[in-house]
Image (cartoon, rainbow, N blue to C red; front, side, top):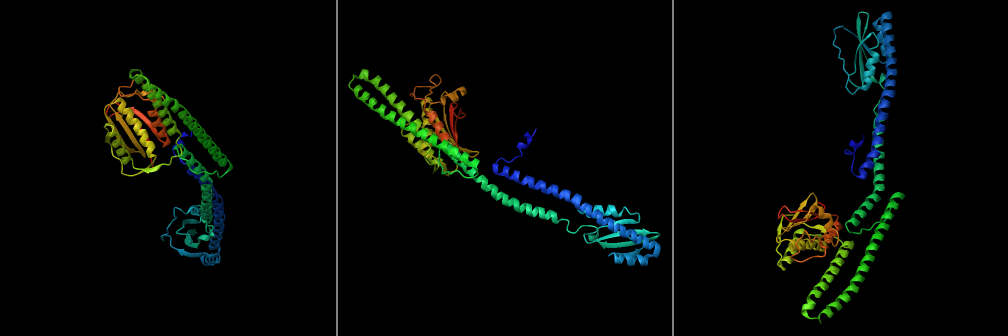
Length: 435
């Protein structure tokens, strides 16, 4: 039943914690202010106004017994000024909208039958008109006789001290949330393939989470290094017999040697591709550099032009630099271009920036890949021989997985779709960037 509140809640932890801190303070101040004004000031005003009302009763009794002159003397002794007026003399009846105690004053004074009207022009005086017999009198006295002085002081104190201690609490809150922010930054950087210095700090629970993150990061790095060492050893052990095989094959007749040499080359290609895949999957220590994407694409197109691979570039991006791993990005795009060249005749590279994402899309006019097989083709050593053209040579099924690992190392993704430009496959490298 409270799901609708979620859309109005802050998204960041700092602002949610600030809301938890500020809301009770403000709510408490409102309750105290309302209760104090209604209970205390209203009660005090009633008591003071009834005292003045009793004095009005005394004045009217003196008028009836001894006359107006004696009543004026009594009024002066009570701190009031009293004058006789004609019945048709104009008398204003005012009260300011924000004068809350004025409602109580008017209610209590007008409860006396001899008081006709009450005027509350400001905070300094009160005017009242009374009738005794056939005579009318205007009586003026100080507002402090019926209202407590400085009724706003409590509210001012609440606001001032509430704001003061809230500011202090904000500094303390920010200090407590800083370790959580540092932990989140370190985890996000590690997810992007970077190691940033991090030391657990803060409360015990935050320290425990930070230490758990460091232990996890160390285990992952240790695992990756061990696997890299194993692969390096396997590479060294396999390259030696492959070299011996090549040497042995060189003594065979040409008609027997050529098919066997092709098998050996395929083995060598498979080994190199697998080592490249492991290398880019484990590459977490490479630091991102300021890289101009436009220059990177131009260099890539120029390199492929030397091998008679024609690539057209479409789309425009600002001529500025972003934090990227240029060698890795170039390798990912090379894999995508090689796939496009293998299965199509025309290649386009589309580059653009959209919603803080840098997008490189490689389009081809080949047969494409069915949408149901997009996840499958991202797996290592997967080749869709039945759906893809093999006329221009066969890979080992690691081009797209390597590109996918490089994209995820930048915190992005590799997305496959149907090309709207060439009606073949569109492989998009989507990488988040900062403004």
